[in-house]
Amino acid sequence: MVTGTTTPEAELLRVAGSVPDPELPVLTLQELGVLRAVHLRDADAVEVELTPTYTGCPALEAMSVDIERALHEHGIRDVTVRTVLTPAWSTDDITPEGRRKLREFGIAPPRVRRDSGPVALELGPTRTLTEETDPVRCPHCGSADTELLSRFSSTACKALRRCLACREPFDHFKEL
Image (cartoon, rainbow, N blue to C red; front, side, top):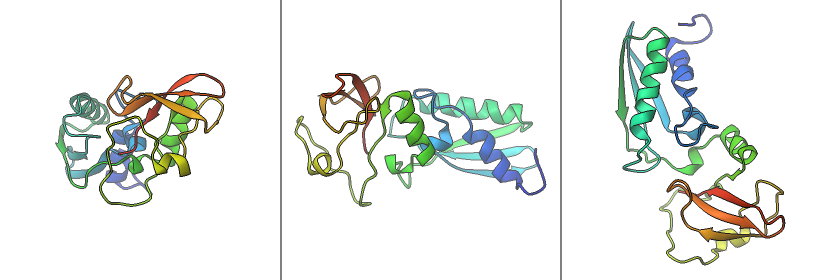
């Protein structure tokens, strides 16, 4: 473990946070915002708090195993990963660095929500006031002239869109 100016818990948070997301390996768990805390319980015992992007997220088990592996490799023998559902994860938890990486990877990052209330869900492919005032921009050319092709893409948290300027399809990480 690194000592000095870095606390042991901060170092373990860095190690656990550096684990790539299994569904979006361009992002780390810290950049995605699902890693909530790391608590040092003993010299070689750690409890990690992890919040899934949504209840029933199929990647949660893989995230837990990968965190355990990273901390074991860092010299921690006893690792417990605990699922924490409160506060619920939101796309606002994605760091600015994570948003930048999504864009560079060709995925339009989620827009930042302006309130902390419940997220309105829509069932049809209508444009919302949010899209009119804060459009989903193409990660390839930056155009705001995009259209929704499908509410779901390769994962439940992404929608499939197409840019009407450069005609390229792209994933959009949906706001939650």
